Length: 151
Image 1 (cartoon, rainbow, N blue to C red):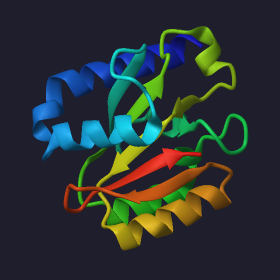
Image 2: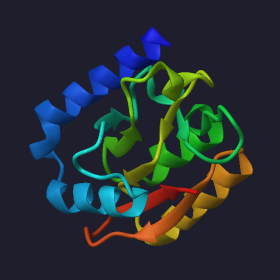
Image 3: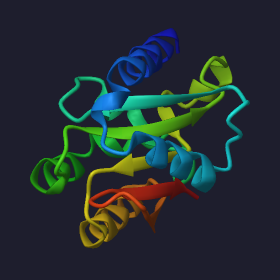
């Protein structure tokens, strides 16, 4: 569990250091809060997850099959490498400092923003749900991004 906390801390720091590199980051942040229902004043973490990170496959959705690690699926990784027009995803995790958050040996995302156009975003939703995760696709106000709620 400590290792997963360390990964979250690394990606939280990555977000703090690189957030200005993300186009319209404030809009994406607000969309993540809105779709996840997480209060900005609660214990949470916004993380910037590079697709090429060795730790990317530790992430999954809060809902779906318990302990899912949908980002470890090779078909999903290949899809993102072919269709995502950016280098990273932006996600939000509820209560990242609690051991209980990682009880299923995964980092559960409450919501995530991916640099996919909406039609590709629907394909990602399908692939994720097929692999035991649960991300519902939603439109983003930021052109070229899709927002997902774990439901």
